[in-house]
Length: 132
Image (cartoon, rainbow, N blue to C red; front, side):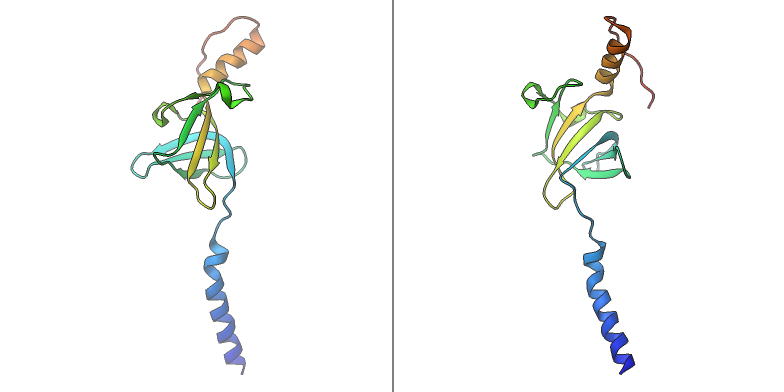
């Protein structure tokens, strides 16, 4: 009887393993671009909290650039995924139940550097090199 109970428990645990291994997919990720994988059409994003995540990019993925501090996507400009660079800050909306990017909203690190210099140095605006 004990052997039967252990066998039943083992079968139950083996059946639950795939369900326990699945990761919950968030609706969006906010972070910095950590790199790209052209072969698999993926972008790596280091979230503000947590580990780096690889996200699938498709031809349907919408990519938009906004100015730092902008809160309305009406002023966003469509760009190509090839215009996105490592270090850029992004908000990535994901497809339901998949690590696939539906929309990527980009604030370039160069634009953020100009804004920071503007806000700390008065009216002087110039691009700055930000560390990678």
